[in-house]
Every structure is written in C-alpha cells, then in structure tokens.
Amino acid sequence: MVDVIKLLESRGKTATLIKTVATILHCPQTLSTELKEACFGTLERIISEHSQLGRSPASTLLVSSSLCTLRETIAPKSDQDMGVRLLNCISTLLSRAIDASSHWGKQSRVLAIACECFGLALASIDVAEFDESTLEHYLSIALQVLPNTNLSCHAVKELLSASVTLAIGRFSRSPSDFDWCSSTGLGRLATVFQRHLVSTDPEVVETALEVFPRLTAGQACLAGHQALIKWLGDNLLPRFVWDTARSMHGNVRAGAATALGQLFCYEHVWHVFRDSLQIAEIDAIHLMMTTAITDPDVFARRSAISALSSWISDNTLGAYSCHATTLRRTLSESVAFDLDSDVQHAGIHAWMCCLELDLNGTDSEHRNPGAAKAVLQQADTDGLGIALGRALAPGCDHKVRTEARKLAERLRGRLQQEFQVEVSPMRDAGFFHRLSGLCERRELEEHITSSAEARTKGVEEVLDRTTSEWLHQKLVARGNVLASSRTDHFAALNGNVTVMQVLEQRLDSEDEDCEWKRIDSVIDDILCAAATDHQDFDCY
Image (cartoon, rainbow, N blue to C red):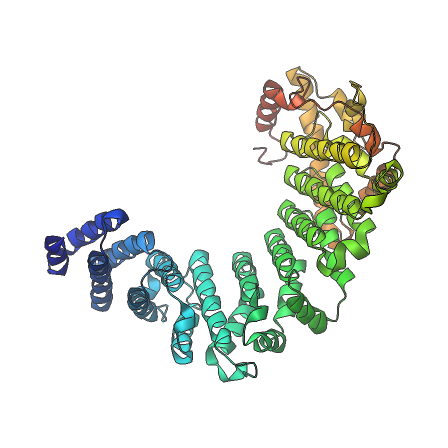
C-alpha cells in the first residue's frame, strides 16, 4: 500500500495515474482510508492543474477522464473533508466555464460530467454544516454557469438540482424571521426558475418542472419554512408552474401534471398556490381530470391519471371525500376508452383504491350483503362495470387484463369474507367478447381478416380516420378536444353491465382464448402497416 501511495504522489505519466486510481477505487473492499484519500487527492490535483493549463486537447482529455473516474467512485455520505475538497475543485472548474466563449465554457461534454460530479460531491457531504457564506458561494457559482448556452439539458438538470440542494440548506440554517431578499443566491435562483419555466425550448421547461418539486418536499419542518413559502409567493413561482399545464407541448403538460401532482401533496405548498392563483381545490382536480381524459398527448394523460391516483389514496385536496363521483367517472372513462395501456393500468389501480376506501368506510358491525350492494350500485353508476368488463376483454392489453383480474379477485374475496356475499363464478364464453367491441366502429372488423388484401384495406381505413382525428385535435381548441366522443362515452358508461356480472365470470389466469397470445396476427398487422405508403406517413 505504501508503494501505491508513493506512486500516486509521484509526478508520473498522468494518464497512467488516472487508470491506476480508477482500478483502485473500483475495488472498495481493499481500500484503506489513507489510500482512498490519496486516490481522490490525485484526481483533485490533476483536475486543478490541467483545468488551469487550459486550451490543449490533451489537458481537456485528462480532465474529462478524471471527472469520469470521480463520477463512478464518489460515494454518498463519504468523508466530509474529502467531499469539500472535491467540491472546491469542481466548482473552480465550473467557474472557468461561466463565460460561454471560453475554452471550458465550450466543452459541453466535460461540463455535463462536471455538473454531475458537482451534485454527487454535494450529496457526499452534510450541507447543513456549511455556514451561510459558503452556501451562497457555491450557489452563486452554480447559478452563474446555468446561462451558458453550451450546457446540455442533462447538465442544466444537474446544476438546478444542486442549486435546490444548496437553497434548502440556506433556508434550513435561517431563523424563522429570515428575509430571503438578503440572499443574492436565492434571488438568482428564483429568476432562473422563472426563465426556465417560460423558455421556448420544451426540454428546458421539462427540466425545471422535474427539479422544482424538490424545493418543497418535506420542508415544513425547516426553521426557514415560512421564508421558503414567502420566497415562492413573492417570486410568483406558483403562477409560472401552473401556466405550464397549458403549454402547446405535450411533454411539458406531462411534466406539469407530474409536478403539480407532487406539489399538492403538501398542504403548505397547496396553500401558496391557492392564495397566489386564487383557485380552489376543485380547480386543481378539474385540471387533472380534463388532462387525463381529453389531452391528445399520451404522456400528459399518463401523468395526470397517476397524479389523480396518488391524490385519491391520500385524499389530497379532499379529492375523494368531496369529489368521489366525478373522479370515479373519470377513471372509468380512462379504463374503458383510452387506447394507452399505461393509462388504463393506472386507472384500474386508482379504482382499486376507491373500492378499498368505500369498503373500509363501511361500519365493521354492519358489513352485510346490503352494505356491499350499496357500494357496488354506486360503482355501477360511475361506470366500473363496463370499464372492468372492457379491461378483461380478450382484445385488451395483457398488463391491463392482469391488473383488472387482480382487482376483480380482490373485490370478490373481500365481498365473500367480510360481507358474506356469495359469488359463484361461471363461464360465459361470449361475455367479455361482447364488451370488447363497445362503442367502436364494428364495420372496421370486416376489413381485418387473414388475407393480405383485406388487411391492407383495413389499415388504409384506420390510417385515414386516425389522420382525420389528428387534424381535428390540432385545429379545435384544446379544451374541446374529443368533446363529441365524450358524450358517447358517458352514454356507454351508463350501460347495463354491472360489477357483479363481471365478478360472476370465471377469470382464468391462463386463458387460451386470449388474443394477445396470437403473436402471428400481431406481426402480420405490423408488417402490413409498415409496408403501406400512406400519405407520406411513417407507418413504423
């Protein structure tokens, strides 16, 4: 070990030293504290010396290699002193990239790795031990580098995350009467979020939305909690976040739904949004329900339905206690009519939470068939019967059918064990087949046959209608997307299929009649569509 340390301390060939350090650090079980310090000290020295030397390609390559080794070997909550040394080293390198026209300011790849190492170094130490001036120093460096246009979105995300960590540390060390205006770093951070949330680059907005909830998660216990709340309100950040939900970019709307879903789980954060935007709980719930049903972007619908599911299970904003009926009908609509399996899967999971809450809310002393009947009748009114039946239909996605079967079996078990409801499953081979075509254009089925000619004709007609629907969604106001089809959906949800009828069907886990197993048919359809030259559309 002594020889290795001497080797690291020598001024030998730099590339060899980096490889040696990487080899040693990748075997942590053989590391002593002294050897570990020598390894990280060597990397620190190489980065410092060669970042100062500047412009040669060799120096850039050596700094990049050292940073890559650091990224792979920095452990969370490691030695505080070594973490601070690495943080100082990386922050010095970042300070040389503040000017986008400088040598290091142009090295996008190196900057991305350096930003990641900066965040890892912060995670390896206890930021709470820093004093206010140290926190301000690191926060200032991170925020000055962010405007560099050569930064990738990954680098921006890493720097924003590190800035949020430092800001939380700043608030945590502040007294309850702390005035955030006295902190230059906090003022700059608010400005950075404002600019990123209104950026014309959707990836930048997505990045800001992904990082923003970390500011508020679990911060109610901070000493500077009230200062954080005031900082949010004074800088109008709730308005900036809320407005992204109406972006023209689907991925931004998806990010907004995810961010709002996380933020509103904290009552103190919801109060800031409520007071700043002058909105009520129903406005937030309605936004998510509308997005889950009518948004043309599948990622936005997925994010919204996931947010609703978490709100229901935690009764966030009084979602389930005050708005159960509208929420359940939204879930039924998503399960029964959405074409995305992830949306359907999340809708079924949320319905399972609803049923658990309804059944658990029944007085244990009065759990009888009558009480169960009341719960099931309400579920039928809100469309669960048809939604569950369609989710179990042969044409549905296997993952969705599995989740629906889980819901049905769990519900059947609780009804039998706790409410003394006898359910005797039987097989009606045509039951789920009849539901699979509900509210769909049956005339299309005539074209989908085994012959290649008929398949081509069916694909052309489907693509024609898909194109028309796509144009319709682009031309009409976003709030009215799919409005006419929603009327049909509501009518269909009031059909005569009940939850009990579904529970009375035998649900075999390995149903040989499942169409999802007919992989030859699926491949034929895909190849047929791929071979079709349809109005220059990329059918792949």
